[in-house]
Length: 236
Image (cartoon, rainbow, N blue to C red; front, side, top):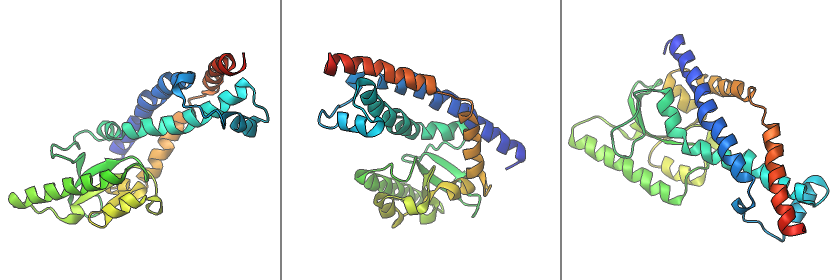
C-alpha cells in the first residue's frame, strides 16, 4: 500500500464517520432519546438511578439517568455495528465478495494468501446462533472450492473483528476459533492493509473528527425535552 492510498483510506474513514455516525447519532439517536415512549421505564428504579447520579430525583435528573446511557452507549454502538460492512465497502472499494456468506475478500498483508472474510463489529457482537451460521458458511465455501479445484485452506476463511483485543473475545467467537481463525483489531487491519500500525492510525483519524463535534447543547436539549414528558407523567 502506498502512502497516498493510506492517506486516502484515512480520509475516507473521516468522511464516513461524519456522514454515517455523527449525523445518525444526532438526528436519529438523540431525537429518539428525547421521547419517553422510547424507554421501558422501570418505576422501581428510575428515581433511585436519578438520585444516584445527581443527588436528587426531579424530572431533569431522571431524564439524565435515562438519556446518558442511551446516547453515549447502546445507540451509537448499535449504529456502528450495523454500518460496519458499509464502512469497509467505503474504505476499500473492490473488496466486496460475490461468494455467499462472505463479506469481503482480500490478499493478506502477512501471508500473501487470499482471505475470505466475514466482518463483525466488536468482541461481543455475535450470539449463540451466529456461531453455527458462520461455520456453515465457511464449510460451504471450502466445499465449493474443492469442487472447483481451488486451494482454499482453513486459515483462508476468517472472521474479521473490526475493533478490540483477542483477550476480549466472547465465548461465541472462541467456539468459532476452534474451527476457523478469528482475527481482531490491530492484527485484522494489519492483514487487511499490510500496515502494522494502521489500526492506531484509523483510531486517530476518527478521533480528529470527534474534535470537530461538540454535542453538549444537543445532550442538554435532549434531556430537557424528555424531562418535560417525565414531569407531566410522573409529577403533575
